[in-house]
Structure formats: C-alpha cells, structure tokens
Image 1 (cartoon, one colour):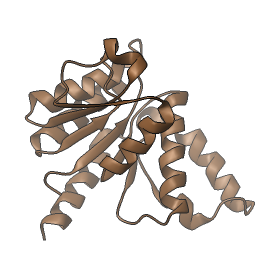
Image 2 (cartoon, rainbow, N blue to C red; image 1 turned 180 degrees about the horizontal axis):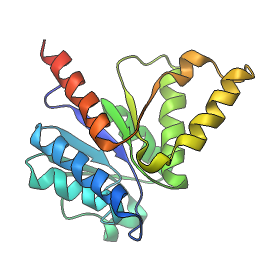
Image 3 (spheres, helix red, strand yellow; image 1 turned 135 degrees about the horizontal axis):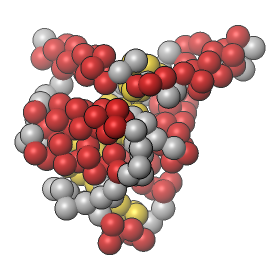
Amino acid sequence: MSGVNIAVFCSSRDLIPQEYKHSASTLGAWIGSNHNTLIYGGIAAGMMEITATATKETGGKVTGIVPSSRKERQSKCLDEVVYVDSLHERKKVMEEKSDIFVVLAGGFGTLDELMSIWTSTAFYGVKGKHILIDNTAGLYTPMLSQLNLMVEQNLLNKNVLEKLEFYENIDELIHRLNLLQQYEKE
C-alpha cells in the first residue's frame, strides 16, 4: 500500500474535543511516514489542517480539493491543489483520486461525504476501496445503531453496511491501515 492516496473526511471546526484533534494528528503522521498522499478538502481549518500539517511534517504529500469560492482559506501545506466549482464536484474528484477513505470526527459535511462515497462505491460495485471510520468517543455509535436497525427492517442490505469499517479509536484504525499496507506488499 506504499504510495496510496488516502482521502480524509473530518471537521473544519477548531473548538472540538482534544481526542478528535489527536486522531487527526496521529492519522496524518501515519500517512506521511508511510509515504502516502493525503487527499482532503484543502482548507486551513480544524482537523483538516491538523491532518495536513502532520502529513506534511512526516514526509507525505498533500493534495487539496478546494472550492474556488474558498481559495483564500486554503492550506499552505498543499503540494497539489485542484480547484472545483461545487461541493458535489469536490466529492467526485476526491473519490476518483483516492484509494482508501478515512472518516474522522465531523459534522454534517463529513456525514455528507461519508454517505456520498459509501453510496457511490456500493451502487457501482467498486471493490478494493476501503471506508474506515474512527469511532473515537463513540461518536458514530448512534449512526451505526440506526444503520443496523435499517438492516433489521430490510431497508438496507447487510452486505452494503459491511462496506463500512468502524474502529473504536485511531490506534485500531491505523492497525487496519498497517494490515492493508502489509497485504499490498505481498
């Protein structure tokens, strides 16, 4: 898995719990130290900037997919920038450029990105693009309960739900990334 593009969806807010910031920093450091490329929204704010900074400081590359209307907010960490005209186009470009998707703590924008990539990969039967979710502090546990209820009531296929990989903390998620990397080298 050396040299893969890893999309990260996360919060752009600054006033969030420290444990979420820790996840962003830890993930960015892992991406960089393993010579991968971060693909993200390109904005210098919140967990987005924390992830980009940690990736850059540990030797990784950083690609930002930036809405043209937000050029003035883009990160200084970017090695490559792709300007887009809409959030829809941003998600499409991130999907096309990325091999793996990681969801950290975030709000409605992060949920939109998760649902979009999950729907797209499930609908088109895309194989090999993993979607890993950091469930630190149980943030996504209520969502997982809702999705399981949908499976129970035959509103959602269990095979589709299994495309989402939930991890209780960033260390477990990174362990999974290490296994994926080891598998790719064999």
